Length: 294
Image (cartoon, rainbow, N blue to C red; front, top):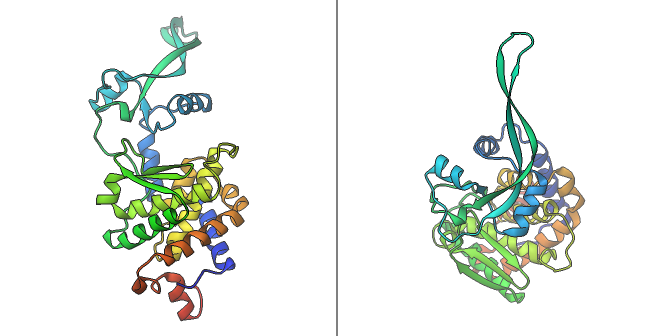
């Protein structure tokens, strides 16, 4: 597969930035907004508290909310995640205009609440996943992506992961959800590329100081560029992911050169590990044969 040129990679990143900036008409994004509207919103302070106590948390609610909303129960022995919540007080007042009594509620202070992550419950229903399955024909890409990672000294583990986690990366290791590798390989491919980007971009280094929006924005932008170069258009899904993690157009564009360098490295690594018949079937190659990008 011919290596994508720097302008080609930059164009892909810019197109993603435009998509991130404008979610209008994005049906998947609209469905996500409708979905999260049913659940509690957490302040930045509470989000930080949740991540500090349970870094793998993906979806939290109180014990009663889990049971009332989904009929799910918190598993015995689970340690709750403590957050701050308003202490509300009700008071009866007389409406001066209508001359009738009414009950008003106001915040009297703050108290500690306890919530639980979905992995601490017996909930087994659907959880939104922005990475769509691209079909079993992407298996060679997954094998090549993992081979590339291993060639760089990264241990690649496949095991069951609870909740909505597709995978994660840490120093010298990435972990993929066993379910995806076996039944949704197209999701596993994107996850392997995303986690490889985290490692290449230094996101897993102990001294990392970048905010989460930048870290996730860079990794997902890299995934989008690599997948597009391989012939799979996942721009909308990648844009949704970046928006979910608080990233915007500036997040993507400020990291343009880093994203392009990491994407090129991953593309070269995947191509080097693909079976020979697949090394000339990417969109980049077809565009080159057609005389340019469409």
